Length: 299
Image 1 (cartoon, one colour):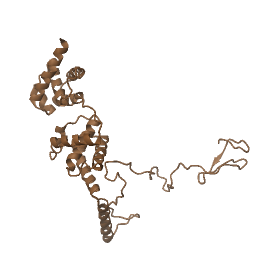
Image 2 (tube, rainbow, N blue to C red):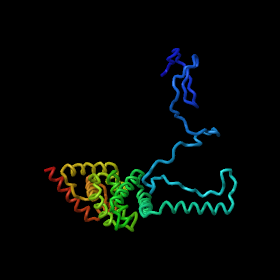
Image 3 (tube, rainbow, N blue to C red):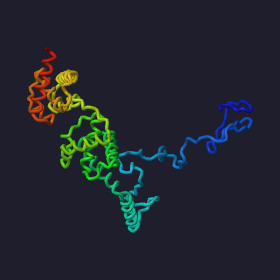
Image 4 (tube, rainbow, N blue to C red):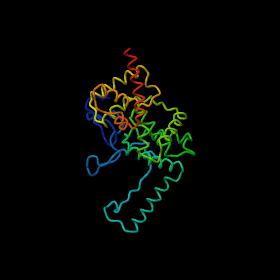
């Protein structure tokens, strides 16, 4: 209410401490309680932003979603005085006990190991935070469904990261995953990926070859005109369904090689294959398929 129902005065006074809204003319209490939208503490030092109402947001990247307590290693008390040696040793023991108590279950240790493996892929492949979180969510679902039992944590985590990349449209392939962490082979990752698709019902879109074109072109230094020509060739191939069931990286490499011929770029199949991470045979076969397709369209 914006006015006093007793005298009609529109100038009301709000008591921030009690939440009462009163009329200064007649003393009528318009509202007894109000929702306090301010902080639940008093800022005595008057420093802006010295206290926060909230903590860090929940994140699947942490085994406990970031909710557990952390005892930091400090050498002084709240007053700034240096702690004695006995007190420091006691706090260190408490810190170790606190850390040990949080990883006492096999599931927690499993998640901690999975997070460490995922961090390797994040660092080596420069995965974004949303991609890493999606990968961790997929792994948690796999762990809950019992898919990790009896299998390698490394393989399932790598498969989850690969699935997350494909679901979010990130241009990553199995060869890059194997290069980033040689302990897990791409064949093993592919097996784990198929396992996740079968049991978790993941909706993974068909990989678009065009997302690899710019990446390959940048490695061999092709200009934008050649890249656009490669996109045109791929669009024709998609319309004719010539990319169905084919390795998207091989198709992208073949389209770039064909575009190089159209724009008179002096690059060999070996150069394109090396940049794409495929064999020359793959580029040659995919190139032949694209060439036959375009010739049939022209006819």
